[in-house]
Amino acid sequence: MVKYIDQMHPWFDEHEASAIYTYLMNGGWATEFKKTREFEERIAEYTGAKFCSIMPNGTISLSVALQAYGIGYGDDVLVPDYTMIATPNSVALLGANVIFVDVERDTMCLDYDKMLEAITPKTKAIMLVEINGRYPNKMDEIIQFCNEQNIVLIEDSAQALGSFRYGKHLGTFGNIGSFSFSAPKIISTGQGGALITNDEEAIKNIRLIRDFGRERGGIDHYLTKGWNYKFTDIQAIIGLEQMKKLSWRIERKKQIGKLYAEHLQGIPEVEVPFTNFDETSLWFFDILVNDRRGLKDYLHSFNIGSREFYPALHSEPAYGYYNRSFPITEEISKKGLWLPSSSDLSNEDIKGICEVIRNYYN
Ligand SMILES: *Cc1c(COP(=O)(O)O)cnc(C)c1O
View 1 (cartoon, rainbow, N blue to C red):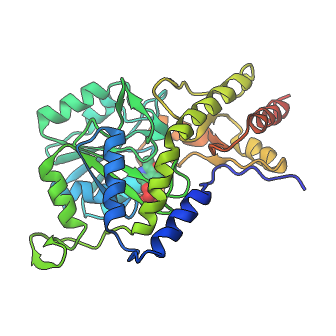
View 2 (view 1 turned 45 degrees about the vertical axis):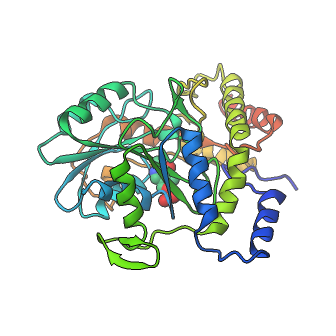
């Protein structure tokens, strides 16, 4: 039997298992408590943010980030057309309006000039998605614009844990940064998310919103409308163990990216988007090809998994703005393919995958 190489999987070992065992055998209540607070401290420490609040997932976290700044019904929020569906849906959940904006061809992140065209007096927030650990070319301009116009800047850094810009962790440039620990992310707690911020007022709001709006645990006095977006200490224990492995995984992901790039050289049909590996730990290794379906099926016949890029969200039935056009997103979403990217992929696997791709085009 030939092994199947999947596009991505989370991985845990005896460290997570024994930490959970010890916890449960010592009277842990499973729900969030000290371990969740410790996980928050680790994330704040690692990213260099003042505050962190752990969330049940990376969709709710984005929604809470907006709610913490009072964004809701009737407000416009700009979202890149090329992103994971959670980004616009977190806006829609609040009854706010999703306004799609096209992305840059090279970074696949929000295009500043097209963003300016979409601004109206109703624009209250911008979702800056650091897709695949990359960031927009005109990030400084976006930040400055938001500061001057009093527009809330939320960074969706779900794919950017371990990626930096000039030595500063992504997610620390806007008002709030959001992460996800879902199964395919670089570290996982099964489901999970986190918000980071330096804004004391925002973190207060976030902590109220995630705990029914109550003044304090056990005190039934409600300062705002909040929900139950708490975590569990069982997941936090997994997260704490995964954090110990993060630095190694980031380095490994960079090696994987460089090895792919090297071994895919000289195949004219395969476009490898540029990555600055000094800053970026690619979440998924990405390529752009014209006959994506053919390559995907061919890889599959060799037991190699791959995944197509997200579609252009404006034209999905959920949004249905079929009459709009976002040419860059439309192009890359048709051509993009993610190759196997788990951090435990071996060098031999990567070389083998590149061989199969080379054979396909021969
Ligand atoms: C994974 C992801 C999310 C959503 O996170 P969940 O934890 O799955 O809800 C949001 N945005 C981006 C860019 C993501 O990759």
